[in-house]
Length: 262
Image (tube, helix red, strand yellow):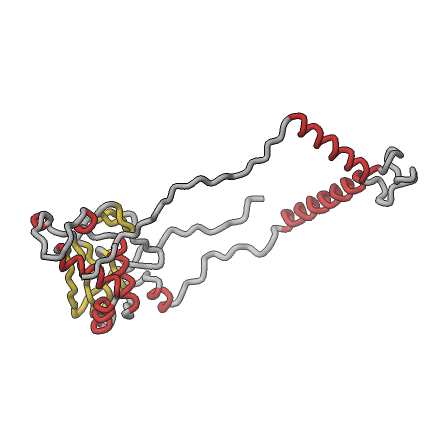
């Protein structure tokens, strides 16, 4: 039997990464400031006329840096005046009383409406305690603890297979799956929508039962999980349900921006 690793592993290789640093002493810093000041003086005032051009006449930019500062200050004053006008005028149309309501199709697609129909459920479970000591079939290696529990990627594999099989709606542990749902496992517990769940983990999907069961059976990641089912007794059960009803998902809290008080 060909074995693969169900849990993703990262390889950390030791090594030395040398980052060059720029070290500046007090004397070097002071020298740099002197050079910068000299260059600035040359740009703003020329070679020696105290604000004039290199030949001693007026600078082609007027007063040099003083002219630049004056121009920037004028821009700031104009911006402040424009801001005062916008505040006095109310800045734009008044906000609408409520956001437009989405249509029924969008509500259903977002999982915010209850769903009903034929369904398929897939149940994943850890190896029972009485089987964890073996014995194991010939050719099967001795398991490590990670081999005997359901992992996050196992649940994700079933979820992805059901979506690819055309699921119209889905639940995990009875909680509706939406675009906001994240499957996270800590140890052998599942964290979902603020709740913590212990195995067995039940994933259910409404749709064409033939397509759904075929998608789960053909998925390579689910097939890998089934290898561990055969070798170490992990739980795996697929059932068809003639009629199932899924609850609507709880919409997330939404906050809207409002104008500042005048």
